[in-house]
Length: 150
View (cartoon, rainbow, N blue to C red):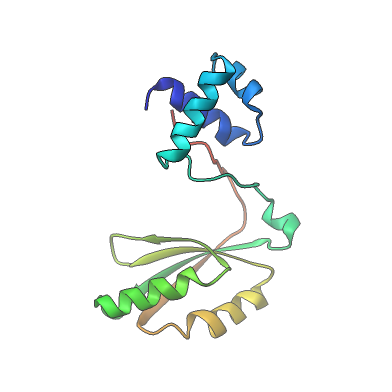
C-alpha cells in the first residue's frame, strides 16, 4: 500500500459516496487506475465495506454508555460464551478486548436510561461468567472520526 492508496482510503472515509470520477480527481489519478486501486484495496480487505454514518440521536438512540466488563474466569468456555453473546446484541456497537483490570469495553447505545436498565437486566445479566460491570455515561461528544490518521 503506497501513499496514493492511503489518499484513496482517506477520501473514501471522508465521503464514501464519491464517484470514481470525483475520487480520481481528488487523488490526482485518471479514472481507470483509480478504480483498479479501489478494487485491489477491496479484494485485499483493506477496504472492508461501505456504510452510511447515521446520527444516533436523530435515529432515536441518544444515550451512549461505555460498559466495562470483568469476567469471573478466563476459561475458553467463558470467553467464547461472552463473545458469542455480545456479537448477537444489537445495542452493543463495539466490543474491545482490553488489557488491565477490565476484560472488555463495550460501547452501548440506547434510547433512555430506562432502556439501559432493561438492557442490563434482560441482556447482560443473562450472560454467564460476568464478575463485574462498570457503566460510564457519555453526555457529549468532543471528537468522532471515521478517517484513520495519515
